Image (cartoon, rainbow, N blue to C red; front, side):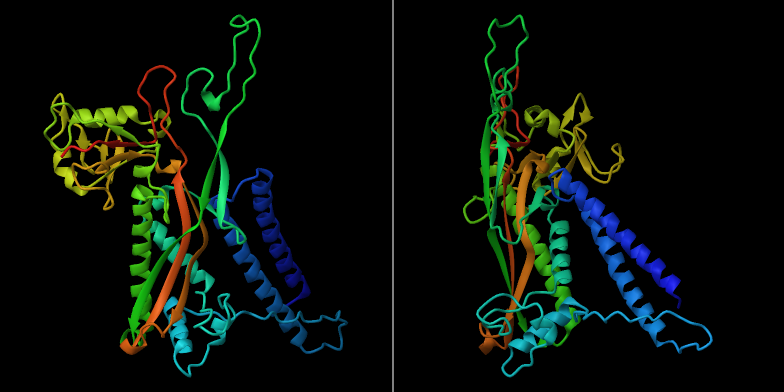
Length: 427
């Protein structure tokens, strides 16, 4: 190992650091959050920097340990002090087992838990404070939640900083595209239209989101805890899917009280009336009118979400003997069914066939969600001690609501439009 080689490694480390700073500086100059791609890029650079730090430290130690060559004068190389590396768990199941053993009477507290204890009356006592899941495991659990959640993966999501419990953000208060109403009140004139111009300005409203708490408890028997890999598999899959399910359900039909405000309960929802003589669950006319009431700019992103019970009815719908509903593959040559060229996705949370919310045409990118800190977990044996069970608690704090608070009246015409369109009750 030579000094030249070490200098080359340090140069590569500095290059990775500068590239990461360039990404951060760009986002700050544009006064915005990092995009998902930018965050992945930052994570990669940080991983490279840690790798170079380890390589440089190792190389300097080896160079310092080399026997001195009396015939050649070499500069003195002082080894860099070894960094104190935080001891980490190898798997999520291993950490849950450590939390269980720490909570048991007379149990030994693993030092890997105490380095990341949750804040409480006593950070090393699980009955007072509990133990947080190691950060990389936390991130993975949240990631799988959003991959499971069909709606949650498509919302506009903003993470909340450590010292905040909510978000207040200004939004344009616009309910009409008529002259004098665009952008909430902006008006312009051709010079010949008015001898004296009238001032105008945009109008804003404030969106107020405060974090709500989604919680889950897992009762694990001693027998299950003996197999850490089985425990990890069960908890990862079960809670990822359940959190994803409940978040999707709230995005669709949440009340806004103690949970996010759902599309169906928001003022932005447009509901198309059924036909006067309609007897079937759904008709071609229903679909045409729903498509017509969708905000034109949302057509490229909108998706049809349906209760699976509606699929048999969709197969029968035709215009001039041509099918309206195109199944996956076949004529569409796409991996999903389509209506008017947009995907059709069965969604468990859609209401029963014939009810409002059984079919929804929505651009979920027009829904805003905030969250904070990922999924947190704590462990205790006290709640179910007599049942020989340990309790794992998971908490996720989030809130959300549609970016729109009302439908939009068109510039010319009378039928309002929205990114969220449903069909009235037909039963």
